[in-house]
Image (cartoon, rainbow, N blue to C red; front, side, top):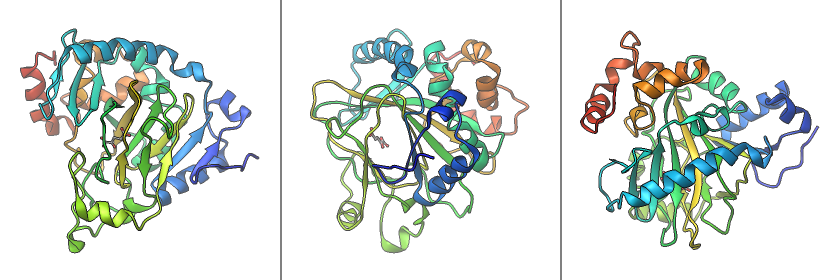
Length: 313
Ligand SMILES: O=C(O)CCC(=O)C(=O)O
């Protein structure tokens, strides 16, 4: 059994597991416990580097289209000129939601086989996909404020999970994601006068506090997978290189709680795309298109916004 770790919270996938596209059951249990306690787990070498070739090529096209959109800082999400994505820009960090063409609807990106058992175990078998997006940081990007992506809740269960799949080497040299293990469990922010939601501005309370806490800078290579709780404090760090650094992120939710307002499934999927998705992936977006689904009503505002931008619903 492979036990060697170089980053805390990391499991190196064995050749047998890679061939089976899943962790052996005892190691799946370990991964689930790490995710629950640390708020993240890294699965190393879960696939060969070719796993991301098609998505990386597709992303290069989307990136050109995004640059052509000439996005303004702090502007609301915009459809790119060739409709390959919705995107926004904050302090040299682009958030890009690609239309789910086959390269992005690929299971490695949109429904990662190593992540799915963890999503099912923690979110429930009927979890939905909130969106697939990319985190792309460019030269001139700065430290984000340490933040959570979702409000702390009273729920004892895990209600939202993110799956990061790098489309290139995302190392210490080009702006790694930094995480503070276990902080998803720290829910009593307000009584300490701390604010959790500032991402792209300064947040002196959090900036100062984290200088006293141990963090992990996550290096990811093609074929690695990071599953994390978006409540785990984290921040983007500066990318000093002229090449943008890109990793994909899928966000998945549990039906136990209300849908988190950040992002929109309609940035990825219109009705035509929805009808083209494979059954396993289509099932995860059904809540956004099937009016009989109990969650459908919660997306009324997102649907109104999307329809204003010409999305076919
Ligand atoms: O791009 C990154 O490394 C992190 C970005 C991030 O955490 C965010 O925008 O919430």
